Image (cartoon, rainbow, N blue to C red; front, side, top):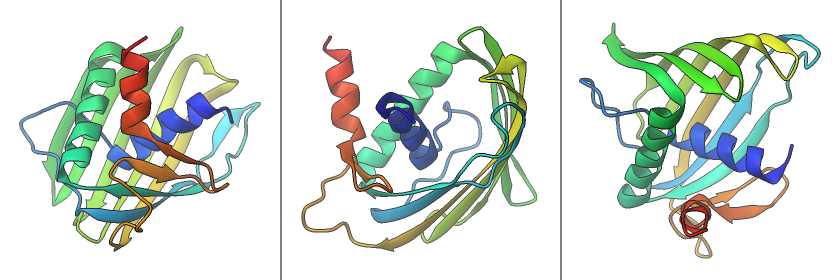
Length: 176
C-alpha cells in the first residue's frame, strides 16, 4: 500500500469524519488511540484484505481538525452523506465518487468514544474499484492512555513503525 493511500485510510479510519449533520458526531477522548482496520472482504481480484493496526495521538483540537478535514473530503467527493441515530447506534449512508467509481456505503457505529468505538461498513462499487464490486470493513478503536512523550496531536504510528502527522501532511498539501 503506498504512503498516500495509507495516510488517507489512516486519517479516515481515525477521524471517522463526517459532515456536520443534525446528529452531532461524538468527539473522542484526548490521548492515544489504537485503531485496527480490516477484516473486510470483497468480490473480485482483490479478494480478502489484510488488517492494519495504527496508533493515533489526539487532543480536542486535533480531533476536531481531523473531523473537519473529513468534512472537506466528503463535500468534494460525496453527493450524499446522512448520519442518524437509531437505537443508540450511529448509522451512516453515503454515495461518493472515487475516480470514475461510485461507492455506495452503509456503516453502523457503536461505542462511547471515550474508551472504545467500532464501525462496520459495507460498500458497493460501480464500476468495480481496483477489481472489487463490493467490500466490507471493520474499524475497532480503543483508548490506551495518554500520548507518549515523543508524540504530538495528529501523530500516527503505522503498524510498520512509520510515523506521520496527518495534520502537518494536510497543511503541506494545501501550501502546494
